[in-house]
Length: 556
Image 1: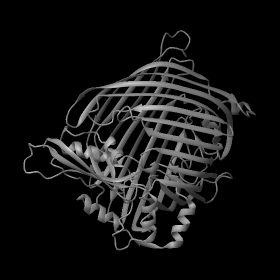
Image 2 (image 1 turned 90 degrees about the vertical axis):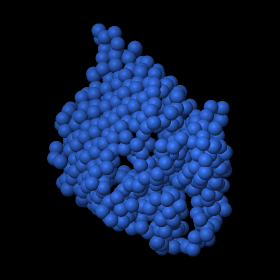
Image 3 (image 1 turned 135 degrees about the vertical axis):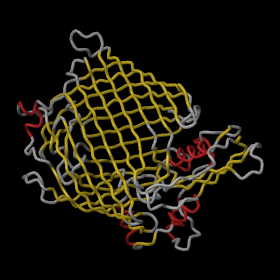
Image 4 (image 1 turned 120 degrees about the horizontal axis):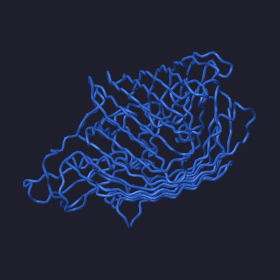
């Protein structure tokens, strides 16, 4: 989260200044920021070359040679330790002696850019008269500010949130991430410590420790992950341990419907192999085992109606097998989810399906139960705009609990009309049967219709939509906070199921509003500050006539 103290300090120091830095960066990368939301960097992708020496240059957060450079930029560069060259080299999906083409370099750029402490990356072949000789590769990276003290607060759905702490995503340029903070929200308050680092003995792997001590229990997570790091990765492996104790509240109609204690654990391991790969697609198979338990106890149930919201216990143990197909069709884009930030969007197909065989928590008369998950996504460029589609599904069959199924779909469309004006629309839907009551399907401020309380309207099925006019000011505060504006309209409805009878309104929920967006393009914490005023149209004693929102989100 962005430090409120830092924001106030920066605002006092200066007003708005023209954001030329992004144009300078785009010129360096050889691509101009387009009116339409996309651009592509060409690298003669069909030519295969053997890699000779690799040259790495890590650049500071700010270019102090710029004519509008200020003392605060010099101070930030002085306080920040640039990412070490060895760290960048360890993250590269290739080494000296490998044979690569332009698509492989583009993939390497995306991998380096995906590191939180890197703002952007440029990887090129050094010009050579003889392409049959080993070719040198030149790598340039631009760092993000990675030490982020947080003194922040927010309000969402009528509930206040507070966070105090410090986060460092790149300790002394090593790529190690650490975080310590105090957090308070509508559910609980407590302290958190997180440490994440590359595991030096196994390439492209990470270890993570996450510990929370809250007023309602403790949470401990330990994990090791060696993923399919790039398109041609031959194998993956991960193992994780999670133990969690907490009190969970269920809201409805702007009030607390129910509260229950949860004791849970999840132990999981998985491995996988590549089945086959072509130039721009790959197929992978995975296998794994999961031991997952969730025990629910009433915390404060007063009526029979409330008891409908107490989940059934789950004690799952199952091996699983999965298959994944990934098509590499990335484009470098701007102003999609962030502001003035390079974003890598995959327009190719991505499918994944997993099927597990339950061995422990079985319904009467069943020899085996089933758990499945599926997901699919695809992107399209339509009329100089971008459309992103996604579909997700999951289900548990033949267990002690009633069979539950869920299918969710999402469509997003982005259109840029001018440098200053953009359009965004979204439609999301969920259909389900026997939903898990600790994961209710609901509409509120947090998931589709701004201005309403959290989990305001419940149901088995849901449909929401949003339309936004987005205004990109091309101004920023001290080259640190980019500024945008939005006008929005939301609508949605949840229906069907036992919980719907307790909704205070079955009408379609709708709202309109305006807001400001602040994004720190030089920070490793790639989040957007939302400051909104929303006007809900429902009339209820639990719905305010106006709702102001201050929160941190992952997109515009």
